Each structure stands twice: as structure tokens, then as C-alpha cells.
Length: 257
Image (cartoon, rainbow, N blue to C red):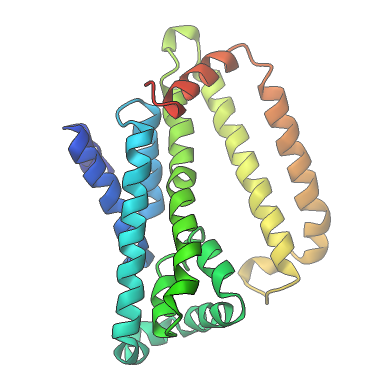
């Protein structure tokens, strides 16, 4: 599917913007986003941006429009079909997630709408559940717009970083540097995930990973991994190919590629 998407995008600028908008729309659409590999597809689009195939400042607004269309359609569907949706077997199977989303919206509606956009399982649910709860539009619109503005570049970024690395000329013996970039990126991701899990460990119940990552272990593992990740990022700046990589990345992010 990624190969088909890449072929579609490279045909013209118009096609590329339609593809970005469509992926953002489907990833945001009620329930569809739960089964669509939208995060992977957004990273794939980011790689094309990083490789210079798509302009960052064309893709960003296209992503925003797709997000807004998906969220507002989901919000309308939730309000229009709240009765049938509650009785739908799919919703009953995901009742625990639905109940948590409803509770969060009741407690902190604006915060939940904003943060929910950046969390995979809740992204296609929050707007729909907000509609089902008859949340006033005035409470939905501001956090939704803010979330839709910042979500596309954040989800493009892993692909952009990878695409810019791929563009480093092979004759500069860049293979080892690219592997080093990948290792540091994975370490940063792991540190962020462990810190998030550490923060959540005092607020949520147990799951399958709690057996291996109890709160007592996270107390030292999360900070240690974070320090190691920060140290790796600092050390990476000393690599002789880092200026080349940053120059390519700068061109992408300033729309010069």
C-alpha cells in the first residue's frame, strides 16, 4: 500500500496533496482510524517530504484540512447516530475504551480533545464520543483546531528525519552514520515511552507489561534511559556527517528542497 501511495504522490503536486489530505482524513475518521495503519502511512509521507518529493509547507496545510474534515464528520456522526452507535456490537466490544473516553471528556473535555488527537487508539474516537455526549461546539472547536494544526508535522517528523538521512550521499561513507541515527532515534523513543509509562503507572491499572515493568523498576529505568538518550543525542552532534545531515534537514523544513 505504501508503494502505491508513493507512486500516486510522485505523479504531481496536486496528487500528493490529495494523498496527504486523504490519509489525515481517514486516520481521523470515527472508527476507521482504529483499523487503518495511518501512523505508518503518515511516516511514509514524511519520508517523501524528507526526500524532497513533497514540499513540507504544502503537505502541512493539506494534513490540517484532512484532520479537520475527519474530526468534524466524526463529531457530527456521533451526535446524529448516538443511539445506534451505543447498540452497535463493535462499540460493545470496545466498551472499556469507550467508557474511558467518555469519562475523560466529562472530567476534562478540552484537554482530552487536544491530547486525544496525539494518542492512536483515542484519535478516531474522541470527536465521535464528544458528539455522542452532545458536547457544545464552543468546547470542541478550539482544542480541535489546535490539535489539527500540530498533529501533521509531529507525525510526519519520523519519516522526515529518515528521508533526510537517506539523502546523505553514499560516497560520503554515510552507512554507519545512518545506522547510528536509527539507534539514537530508537533510544529516544524508548526513553519517552518508559517515562510515559512511569508517569501513567501511578494512575492506571495493570496490564500485561506491568509484570515486567512494575513501578518500582520504572523508578530507576525510565530516568536512566532518559539520561542515556540525552547523552547519545549530544554525542551525535560531534559526528563529522552531522552538519551535512542538518543542512539537508534544514532545506526540507524551510521548504527549499
